[in-house]
Length: 218
Image (cartoon, rainbow, N blue to C red):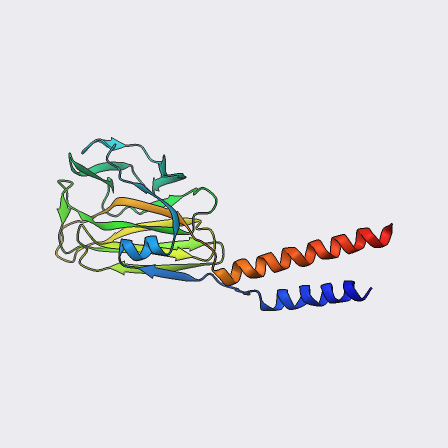
């Protein structure tokens, strides 16, 4: 009985020290190297298989490494932008919002290159892009100002990512900027060492309790 009480007390203490988060936590990265250092199993969708200038029906089911996802736009379809040797994913209407969702289980990191393109499906300098990431318990939004072809932004969440949106801020000069994505990266996150230790301790306590119960029934 004493062993049982000790095990129960340890389990209660364990639950008390485990992180209790009511809302989602997000970390933002502005370079690919830092994003990859904080994640594991990263896979990239380069979009180089898209037909240049041709319209592609929304939604699309695609993969980034071992992860699958669905890409949609809210009113029209997609169009392949960029150049023959480096193609990008863009909406066919400038005001459309590109949404990535339907991720494989375990996707907790999402990033890529985000910028605007013009009506010739080429890079548009000076555009700004709004990026939003959502989990079941929260969201985070960032704006990439004066985006370039190398404007990386990545989010890492403490829970599975449900959706990720990309939209363009329309220029005040009357011209248009289409939301455009290149090299979308999806990844998982390795638990912190302390989290692993707590998980192992918790499992050990449960095994100890179950073993003691079996022994007392004999």
